[in-house]
Image (cartoon, rainbow, N blue to C red):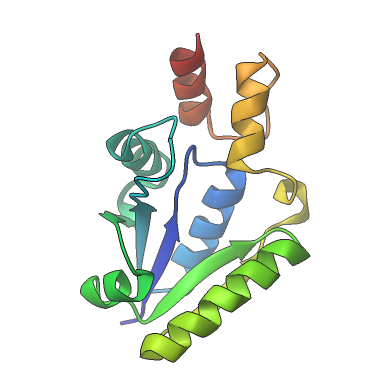
Length: 155
């Protein structure tokens, strides 16, 4: 049984995130989606709110967790065989590749990159929050549950 770990801040989950997670679900026996607890980042949604949104979006197809600290230690704790990361741009690749090489150096953990579908490549959580704050349309950017949560949080 192969277990994939899909880590991220998911603040909020976007259609790009959900696409990568759904594709991982089709490729691996078990998928653990882990929400990063980064105390140095000011998040719009709590860890529990982000997990609840991901749970509503993906249901029983995934397991949910949170973590703080080294990704490779968390990967070992959840029994992951591989880390799965989505890539939107060349900049994403350069950053994520450096992290993947460090993770492999530390523990031998492999990282697989899934390129984001072109229709989602421009979407980031930061841009989604900005559009939502300014009252713009979130159509095609986030799942309905996330759009509702953004509207409630920012109204």
